[in-house]
Length: 282
Image (cartoon, rainbow, N blue to C red):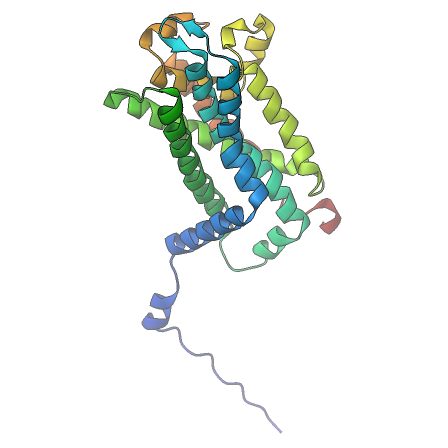
């Protein structure tokens, strides 16, 4: 007795047309990542609410001017915008990727026909969308309650754009890279949160940067958050305030150079350290 196998149905043009393209797959993955983020109340409250809460607390404590026409609150707001961008990228990814790895989510993704880059694209889309929403919310609160002056020139808005893009890119890549240090889902927060807090304290977020010890300023200058804060100060604070920076100006050329260098460093670390499975899975 012989058996016959039914020939596979040919792939027609109509069938191929129904298959989503690479861009559509990335957008779908991005929507999925955003939905998962919004369903996690802890992530939403910490990522979106923490910077606003900190602004309210510090504004109630400090009301002095640190320079003519520049209040401490205005200075602090620029640092919190940078911190918000770092939180949604570096800290959020560094904590949640180990959770997905520990639960086997990444292992299942790797076993599907979906291109691996689509998963990364989904994370990037989530970071960009949530980062924009958080920045708009911070600016709205700061303008309404603390008289923050928005940039008045196209040049300053462009500076705000490229500092934010380079900063988020560097922090996103570093967040993906540092996620490989966590051995379990529970250790992700223990690995990432102390790093983020230390960087905030030494990078001119909670304190005027030039009031910190010199050695602390030098350590902070190695990492991107300090340069994100400095770049954003050039956007939201008077040009005259640049003379009070450690280099005697806002040093936007150096800001671009350091942030670009961290984008390259983060990419190399991602390519060489990222893991889809835990060590126990092999």
